[in-house]
Structure formats: structure tokens, C-alpha cells
Length: 255
Image 1 (cartoon, helix red, strand yellow):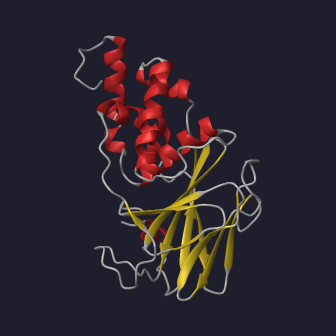
Image 2 (tube, rainbow, N blue to C red):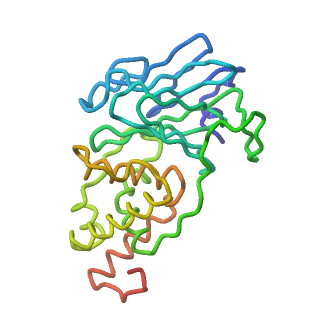
């Protein structure tokens, strides 16, 4: 059963519905909806978030997501992991699937908002009823077992709390401790993973901006979860790796 069905209301044509941490919002084509510290969806407890960050409005028969921020980015993805768009400051992207997940980060906190469109140009089977809108199809990225474990350690809280609205991404030291790894080993593998994704065009994993160490962990989690590279079904691997490194069981080749 979908979240819209759980809400008990059917979607009207051109209507857009949002869910954030169990709260529902209905948007109609004559509305402009703002997400930020001030706005229609107000997140006023995070000083790193722009006052007016993201804007949703209807134009040319589609709902559009616009980034009005000056330094924060967002990701809009199909919940089935078929497509993902990176929304830099000043950019805009259409809402083309019936059920999409909007994720963004401010400081070490990530947020997720679910979007439900009454008229989706792209059908569940993947056939488009409108021309290409610039969405990027997500390709398979091979990960070594240790790279997947690293991502899982960073994404664990997010995967256990899907739909909760806001989640803190752990520090490198906390994630390393979860795995039973040393911090030097964890940092080296994090560098390798970020370089791998950067080479295939994933944005937001490199650069010298303030807070880069935090930003790349948050962005890595955002990309891996929304593209289904890691899921909640993978979480038992964390306990297995931790047990191996405590010497409780023999090494099963995860490292």
C-alpha cells in the first residue's frame, strides 16, 4: 500500500502532495510552496538551512522543483531507484514520476520529503509520455565488500529511519567504531569510495569548501540510499563485520 493510500485521500489531477515526518501538505497548481527555515514547510531548528531554500511550483503542465539557495544542493529521485537528479543552487528540475523522494542536507543532518504527483509524465514501467526532461538514469556501480560496509555504516541510521524526516549522519570515527575499523583505514577507504563515484559523475563528493569532511559523508549517504546501492536488507552485514573484528567469528571474506 502506498503512502498516498495510507493518507486516505486520492490525488486530483495536477495536485502534488508532500509528506515530511508524517505531516502531509496538499499543493494545487495556483500555489507556490517554499521549504526552508521560513516557508510553507518550515524547518526552523537548523541554522545551516536557508530561510528560503527550495520552491515547488506548477508551470507548463508540470510541477517544478527550484533551488533558491546559495550554497546547499538537493537530490530528487524516483523511489524505485530508476533516476536521480542533483539540484545545485539556481537549478530547477521537473517532478516526472508519481512517487519521488526529495533529500537534502544542512550541516550533518539529512532530510527527506516524499512527493506524490497526480499526473506523472513517466509511467511506473519506465515509458515516458513526454520528451526527455534531463533526468539521469542511475547505473550500477560495482562496490567491493569493504566499500559497501563503509557506506552501510554511514547510512545505518538513515536506513533504519526511512520516512522519519531528519537523520544525523555519523562522524567518521563513529562509523569506523561501528565496523571495528581504525579511523585511518576508514578514512582511506572513504577517500577511495568518493573518488570512485566522482569519476562516474556523482556530484558533491569533492571540493575544498568549508565543512567538506561532513559534506561528502552526507552526500555519499544521500546518493547511495536514493539510488538503492544499499538498503535496509543489507544492515545485518554490519553486525557480522563488527563480530569478525572483535574476533567472535572467523573472517568470512567481508574484508
